[in-house]
Amino acid sequence: MSTTFASLLTSLRLSLRDPNGTTWSDAQIGELINRGIDAIGGVYPFETVDSVAFTQPVTGSAFTVALTTVDWPIRVDVYDGNGKYRETVLPTAGDGPDSGWEIHGGILYMPTRYALPTDQGTLKIVGYGPWTQINTAQTSSATNLDVTAQNAVKVFVEAEALSMLTFDRAQFQQWQVGSGNSDVTALGMNNLAMSAQQRWRQEKARIRRFRKLG
Image (cartoon, rainbow, N blue to C red; front, side):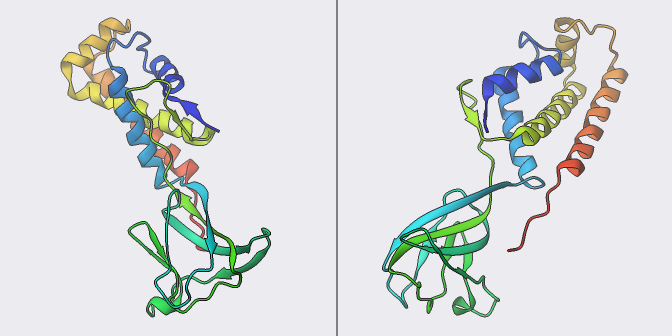
């Protein structure tokens, strides 16, 4: 599934009591959203598959595949031209280029002496990749975050946005007036920010997904 920048903005402005964008601009919240997307990638990675068609690769030469969505591969499977599974290529054992496939700089290097079992087919590279960042210049920009990832990003943004108010007195006063929170003191604001940060730590622990090793 996916969601748009506009949808995330609406939800976050309600949570932050800033429905009219008086305290935080769209660009500010957008930057925090992208930081949140990057932050959850480390604990709740996006599961994806790169499918790469091949035709008679030359055996014995450097056989490489440029990855597009996968940045942490866990398995490389070979399918023939009819979509039938043929075999799984083993990962490197750390004994040089012929010990198995390895990845470096977004490039998958196949064993130099490996011969594919079919003349035509598809390599399916199973693994993890980054969640899609939003374009802060377009509210229609979409990200592929699922529901769990969306909720986690919102928790991250709320924690960061409230923390910003504890460092910027002018922005804090703007939030007090614009959001009708004139009864919130600087000390109270600090407590709100600390509570939001604690909630983010709890959310990270809740959504943590252990990466498969293949």
